[in-house]
Amino acid sequence: MSAQIIDGKAFAAQVRARIGEQVATFHATAGRAPGLAVVLVGEDPASAVYVRAKGKATREAGMESIEHRLPADVGQEPLLALIDTLNADPAVDGILVQLPLPAGMDERAVTTRIDPDKDVDGFHPVNAGRLATGIEGFVPCTPYGCLMLLKDTLGDLSGLDAVVIGRSNIVGKPMAQLLIGESCTVTVAHSRTRDLASVVARADIVVAAVGRPEMVRGEWLKPGATVIDVGINRTDTGLVGDVDFAGAMSVAAAVTPVPGGVGPMTIACLLRNTLISAQRRAGLAQDDRAL
Ligand SMILES: Nc1nc(=O)c2c([nH]1)NC[C@@H]1CN(c3ccc(C(=O)N[C@@H](CCC(=O)O)C(=O)O)cc3)C=[N+]21
Image 1 (cartoon, protein in one colour):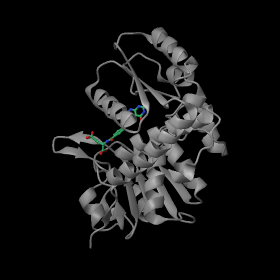
Image 2: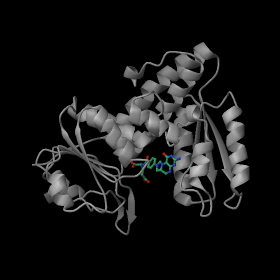
Image 3: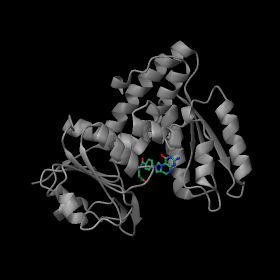
Image 4: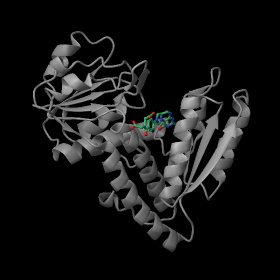
């Protein structure tokens, strides 16, 4: 028996095409394109690749990509000053400062400087609070992309047992909030969890976001589970996720691959958040169902 491979790349392409249509409507109504500002500090090669991919996807959707590259030793103050300028720029609907920042820079000071209403990453504490309390804001792109894949695969998630492995502010915690919002019974596991195998064994949904190559074993899974692998680990044998993919494929009902699973959905959701921001800022309705 072999599980369904959840094609995040194809699904993300569909989402991006729908966003492109809505961007065209926005452009015709508002007289301008939605604008996404991406700030890259330093020369980390992996970050440069991601930033290039984001810029390309932004332009393909008909939005304006405003890219700022700063040297690794720029210092905190000029970066904060750039954020202030972008906050005040009416052509900028979304601001993303690529993480991780070079050593010595204060990520919290940077993410809290971004206007929460332009925070398309959803990393600002105001947006975390909005998500936790059910107020409209921006949902972090990776967990939102995972939720879209889950709903596309399973339909209604109500009453399902979900285990989120990882408790980061960027993935684990907002993922748990979203699953609570879908009426799942949610368990958040992490590095101190005792007997992770038995926690995973009861889950209908497993979201793995730990950053350790293939640590979630196929044998742990409940037969028929749906597995979302957020991990992107570069190893000697290539790119692998946090889940033992071959093992999971023989036990689960559906599994996301790495690459081609969650990653492309992250970028699609970034475009979605930027479109929503532009529509809100222009006082236009947001048709979320179309996304
Ligand atoms: N402020 C900020 N916001 C982010 O959203 C953010 C960030 N910083 N820092 C880095 C992480 C990582 N991230 C990815 C986006 C797309 C893929 C993606 O499209 N991956 C492809 C290709 C993978 C590959 O070949 O490397 C895939 O999984 O199929 C992966 C990872 C966004 N991040």
